[in-house]
Image 1 (tube, rainbow, N blue to C red):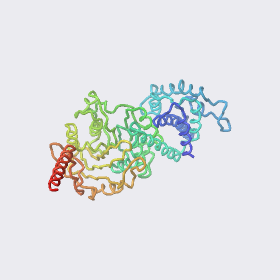
Image 2 (image 1 turned 180 degrees about the vertical axis):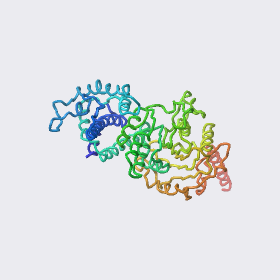
Image 3 (image 1 turned 90 degrees about the horizontal axis):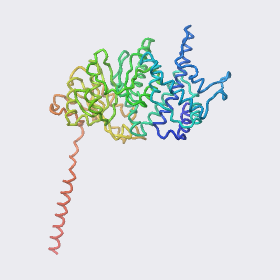
Image 4 (image 1 turned 135 degrees about the horizontal axis):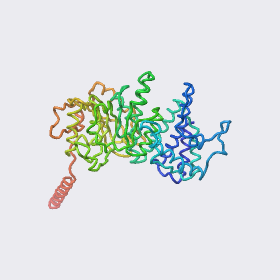
Length: 484
């Protein structure tokens, strides 16, 4: 049923002139899904309050409740066609009344970790892009058929929503910034192994895939007490996201996974000077995939001791600083970080090795991040003690990865088995840091079990050799003519 609803929504939105891309699609379905979720969330809270003998005060005023403007019903439970807004009336209500009302929650909220603040934050920069009020009505009717009242229903819808995030990631660069393959995220979370009570942080949260997977990982570790679940809900997951669309997607993704009021902040992580942060404000676990290839201005670079325009390098400094002593991290970064010879890269590798235990480097093949062609590695490190040995694993799934042939959990199975004890294989090896050149701290992936390929000859050398062979051939032909 749920799959058919999402398919129907696909067909409707693509026919509207206001939505021309996957990014538009996910933005529009997100805000409508969120309001339907919020309606069911309020109903659940009201039911619980009634069972406890207390009175629940709704977050949303009655006239802006889903059951009033989106899906009013008769006493028999059917949609009341006489009260249902449609066409221009619906579009005007959404654009001129509903959105301004919801945007105002940000100013009224008592704190940033409340559902009221999240509502205001989500709608502060959004707009309804569906040009046809009739198409909007069709989408609302489809989403009204979804229910968020049970865990099973939310679990199913969250998987379908993630499928949409995945398709957005496949659509191009902007979407790709929000999506990291779930099998890779799951592997990183399992290696870092968060525990109940850990504060878990992603400063480039995107679609919140890392935080969602960490939440699932912790829930599946055993029976949670009421106190344990409250800890997961309120004191475990933290994130920051610069782009409003990614922020909204991340928020909704976490909510659908079961975290009612995620502590995700809409902010530029790198614009904050974190050098004066207190130890108690740091995190036990960091999981992240910061943007590839981004560039930051000089003003932002001033916030970091190692100044560079490369966004990922600034994030790595931020994450090292934000980790508690003994904290663990799993971070994706371009593989060129391991070998670049510029001063910032060398200084940052030195900082990482001297202040953290970089115990594992997972080398990923091309094609893991569809649409980018980027080669990346995953750095696993613990803060507080210097690195003595680094265990490398060079992932080779034995096939070309891409959009129709993505990475899967089986591809990462051997890595997971060997990483527990840093085992050696044809794809893995250990490097002693004492053998690393202290001038450049080169950490390049060099598999000692694979013969080095001969160096690629420079094009000018190849042309010179061709000219030499042509000359020798010409002389040979002349000699033969003289003999004849």
